[in-house]
Image (cartoon, rainbow, N blue to C red):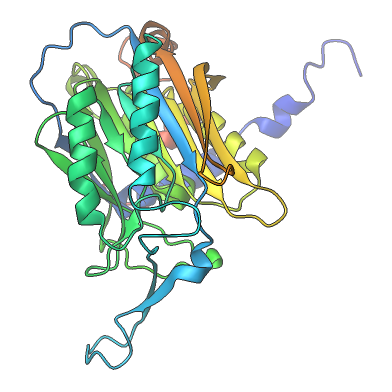
Length: 369
């Protein structure tokens, strides 16, 4: 190599103007497909003071094999005009591993033990399908009671709605308000045939402990959602007035999953998105695999591994492990310093990456604004 030639990757990695133009225009189209960003108000009005440490409990439950509990909806011969048949997972109340009451009982045990350890969580996340029993409405009162008793927000996994055919992740909080997150991308390769929303949108849930995004499993891989999310975080986009809004940053992303993707792929995805969005991000995954039991949790803050402060395993009455529970801590001062780093005076990065994520400006000659 000749002296002074520099890094040989510099030329390879430098984007040409037409390449930047193409990527930015694709990003703008992605924004158009994810129509809007909607804030959902879930604050209770309580005075929680200035929060320094954010704690998130992540519980992965060993569920029965979903393939044994698939129901076709609407049922054949129901007289419904729509010929499309959705295939929903609905566990029996007395399944082979866990009953309807076991899951919230284990969650309460972990909440109580965490409280005794002096580290009560602010959020609780369960893996996808942990709520997929015959009567999820009956479970709702239990979750709401736990949320109020422990002053915590609970995302108790997901269920398949047997009347609307969506994948749903309910959110229960300390107040009376609750919300439902809808899965926006069905895992067709895993045999999941569910209804999806007519429009894809980025929702932010405003809680007592900061702004939260909830994505269900495959949604975290959705390019449109990810690009819209990156444009929303760290004030990449919008007017100067919008970028200067207080409490605009997203503190936390929660991802309930049931995925057979390689563990390293899931971990890498969560880590990378956490780094580039400068958020705290946790994915709770469980998967029935005959070769190996997968009860997993991945937590990153700005791309760095989260601090794990408490861990517990819970066996069933038969002695088989049915839950791995993790408790993570996020230092919000560290997170905010990561979010504030690398800002220019007007809140924008001066780089091709920022240009792409912001969808312009100036390079979008063929895309209407």
